[in-house]
Amino acid sequence: MFLDRKSLWPHLRRWEEQAADHDGPFRLRFGTLFVADADAARNVLVDSADTYLSQSGFYRLGPESLPPAVRSEASRELLRVLARHDLPSSFDLGSALGEVSDSRGRLRHQRWGVELVRRYFAPVIAHRRHTEINALVDTYTTSSVVADDIVGHVLRRAHRTVPAVRAGFAERLGRLRAPEDGARDLVDLVLGLPGELSPGDRAQLLQRLVLSTVGFTGVTLEWVVMLGIQHGYDTPTVRPDQIHHLVRETLRLYPPAWRLIRVAAADHDVCGARVHEGEHVLIGTHAIHRSAAVWDGPLDFRPARWEQPTADQRRSYLPFGKGDGMCPANGFAVKALEHLGHLILSGHRGHVRLRTRRPHVRTLLAPPSGWTRLTPTPAPEH
Image 1 (cartoon, helix red, strand yellow):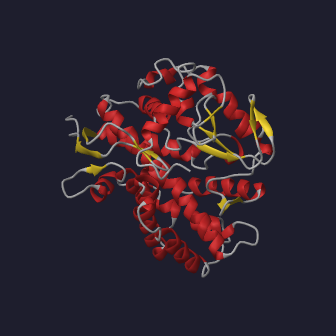
Image 2 (tube, rainbow, N blue to C red; image 1 turned 30 degrees about the vertical axis):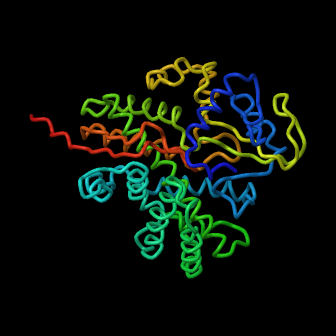
Image 3 (cartoon, helix red, strand yellow; image 1 turned 180 degrees about the vertical axis):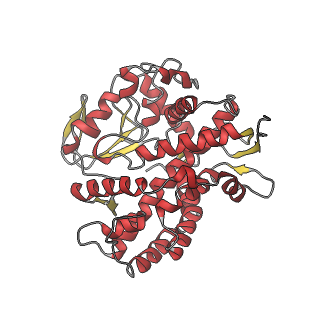
């Protein structure tokens, strides 16, 4: 629809300004209905969900979502998989930072967070026994999640990585059986899903779950570390509760899923605006998160606002969406961000260098181009 534009950030800012001048949903220049307040968003995502096509960004095959029962089972199984792994104790941050840094020790924005989170969730995505699948996940992360969903190279070249990786996943999944003692990773999860799903179907689901796990979380980690350094959180005395507020405020100002799209299944009204069957409705998460009617100093970075958020603020906070199509990374992504954010910022002093001040907006809302350098903080003497 508009991802062929060179830069989307000016459009997002303009839509935020337009939203401030309207009391309800309004139409963008290309005709799509734009929803920029929490009540209207809830009307679309939750209250009137039956008037929209069933949708899930990750539990779907092509444009079609999996049946609700299968999606629910997949979400439950994902929680069981996560519970089987003690990621904080098994993760070696120093080694991972060394692997994702360039030859000058710099962490390149729009890349390093995804690559580090890939390593963090490695036991959950594919256990060591899946050597060939792990290699494909690495290829997908660097050649598609980074290149296509973050940087946007897919707009300038033939998109070959996704079908090639999917075919590789399908070929290897076709050799495996569902585990009898419960899923240990996402590979087991997709193998064990009920229904007449081909290896190709299961490969597509695995690919979407990898994007959910590393893409959204990795981009946000870069924001958390960058903003943490810029606002003085890179100190050994930073507390977990401060990182908790830092993560929430980061997701408010820069939600990686900056818009949610739903397709109307029937003619109906959304807060006074008429929507016709087949029409796309765009929920501007970024605009809802920056509304002056809800947030005091909406463009200011104020993690302390989360010490006592108002009811309106809690209702207007939608970094992972709402309702049946909510992102499956919701709970575990926040826990990972808080753990990694505290681990990095409490153990390092940082320096950020930006080439531009504008965020980079494609499928995901990523930090400006540039780099971050981390210097380990010496251990205190006893």
